[in-house]
Image 1 (cartoon, rainbow, N blue to C red):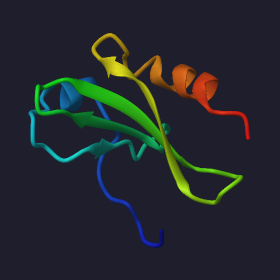
Image 2: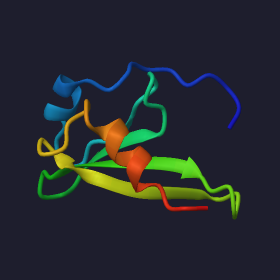
Image 3: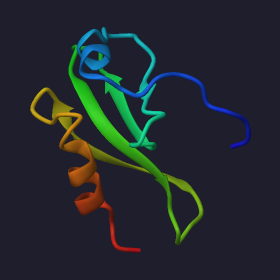
Length: 85
C-alpha cells in the first residue's frame, strides 16, 4: 500500500458516534492496524489487521466489542491474540 493515509487516530467519541452503515474506521496513530466496524444492529467490534508472515496475505483477528473492550485495552488483546506463525 503506497501513499499517505490521512485521518485522525481513533478516539472513544468517534467509536461511540458510529452508526450502522458507517464505514469502518482505522487507527492511523500508534495502534496502526486497529479497526472498528459497526454492524447492522449497532454493535461495534474491534479488529486487528495484519499481514501474515507465513502467507503474505492480509489477516484479521477480532478483539472484542465496544464498550466492553476499550481503546486502551485493545493493544494488549491483539498482541496476546495473534496466532503463532
